[in-house]
Image (cartoon, rainbow, N blue to C red):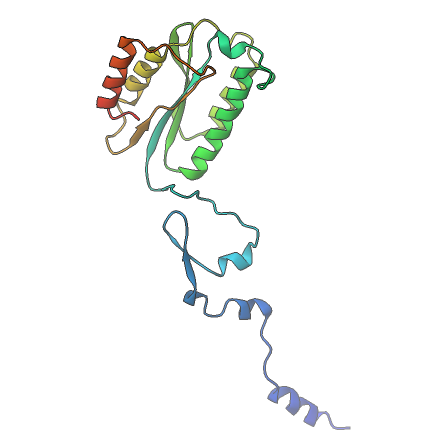
Amino acid sequence: SNPAPRMEEDAEAEPQSYAWESELQRTWDAVEETADGSLRSAAAGSWRPGEKPSVQVGVRRGVMRAVLLVLDCSRHAAEHDVEMKPSRLSVMCDAASDFAGRFFEQNPVSTLAVLVTRREKAEALTQLSCNVRQHQQALRALAASDDGCGGDASLQNALELARDTLSSVASFVSREVPPLVCLLFFIIIVIVLLTFARCSSSRLR
């Protein structure tokens, strides 16, 4: 028997391509805009079918932000709540830790610090940095401490400390001070309103 004819038939047969080669042909013809405004090829979905968008709608990665998260560590935070177990402080620390993780996922070039207000004073729990592990470890230690709460919260002192801390931050950086409180109300007096005005003039949000 002569195998030559068989070899000729194999040579004349149409060459087979790999499956991944056919899937990625002319992928530049179909591009889509992501939530952060960049372009992504449609082929990206073929690599990770279950991939979720890493950027939420409305989030701009290029914006530099300096955020001081204020935690209410007054005596009310240590109270036991039916809907917030084991305590309000523990729930707030968990929420703040989750916020820190999501914050750096959406803002990789930004910085974060955590302030606490208790016994009518305000102090820094962590300094401005981009080290998410440092913030989360400090929050876990705060939640586990026995003397983490006490007295009354002082929104005025927290805002004044935030204003002084952010005074050295460059003007092109967005400066923000979101409070996380355990009560649904604060007694706003005139001096606090004046502090609001000073913070606004310093471009604090």
